[in-house]
Image 1 (cartoon, rainbow, N blue to C red):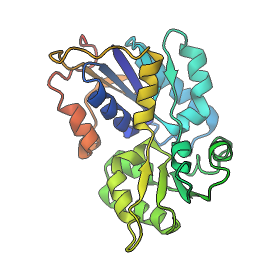
Image 2 (spheres, one colour):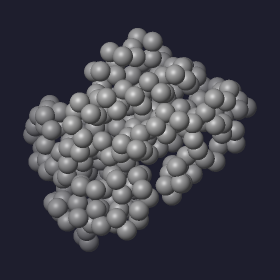
Image 3 (cartoon, helix red, strand yellow):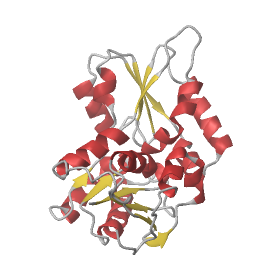
Length: 268
């Protein structure tokens, strides 16, 4: 089994690591667009064009499914990606975890890129799943870009800025950008308030991986002695190693530490 994941940058690491933990036998193809990252400020047409290029590079490696591990691409390009690749390659989009977050009754804060914040897509999810809950949308300018660069100081500034604009009463926070899951503990620490419960964070990595496996018919687990699946990394369509910035996060180190990590073009 081989599963591809795509994103503008290293936000796909959270879902890739979740998949590696759940199905270490699966071959992984990680396809991103570091030259065009971030996608958030781009027009929908530009996002769609770039997403199609990244997806086609991944599809050339004949995966069994493609995970769109990017909220911005899922908002603007999912229909085009499915039209281009399905039924040959099932395409699974990422949905912000607003529904499970709202189930607790709120209040809820949604951290997302400025492009996603206030978008018809996100507002529609709020109306559908959180109409009776107090919801605050919190745009996080620069956070995804800082995470992608592995810039600790810029991450700290962006997290502190978003935390300052998050209501104290919001003890439930939706991470509406896949990059944010890589710094979840830093976000939780920034939102910690004396005398109030710890913040619960809702990401999408686990859910999107589960959905991809369902689309593949929940394939049986490999034997315990099966070798780990291979790792193929494509940066702008070109074979590469994981970017240095990826190794600053636990998820990137997990993927890099696989016993048999193959470069693009190796058998899996």
